[in-house]
Length: 247
Image 1 (spheres, rainbow, N blue to C red):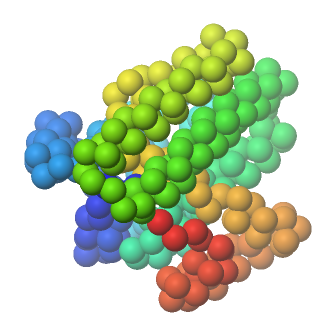
Image 2: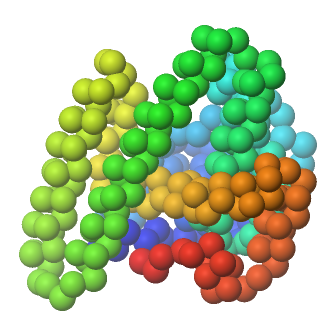
């Protein structure tokens, strides 16, 4: 029982907390093999990815018809991986890219967006923030619960109880979203440890990166330089600088 992800390792990308496939069938086969070993699994599609600067990353047909702010968000996120990337540290990489994405879209909308686009983005940002906070809350509770000595059946029962509580709290939270149901399918498909690990990889260090950006007075080149310096450190020292909690 753990909220830590199973890693897959690659030559150029190093070890990452997810595994990518170009075929959904292949992804489902791999998912089934992990589930057979007792792991929680989460399979989801992605509209974009980064080759980390090894190749030119095109704007893909999978997202070109998205709303402009969503296209901008994906482009900022994926290009951020070319600015700084650490082999074997998914949480650092994805949280940094999520911070760049967030700041990039904010600045792009301030300059290029319409009032309605800015309002829609703010609503989306607020919902995402509230959803992530909910998931991170229960991830912490589950991590603490799994660390306690207990028999497997007791842990299974506690796991079911905590995920049920998360679902109930989500339903209450959703009531304030004016009919938005965008996270329903996600939770219906995989409310499990794998989902928590996935959300954490893209979210847990965002507050630390936001604080670093603020410390650099919003100067992105200076911020990027500071992040590259962090990327040079050993993981233990980097985690300490970013105050990464142990799991």
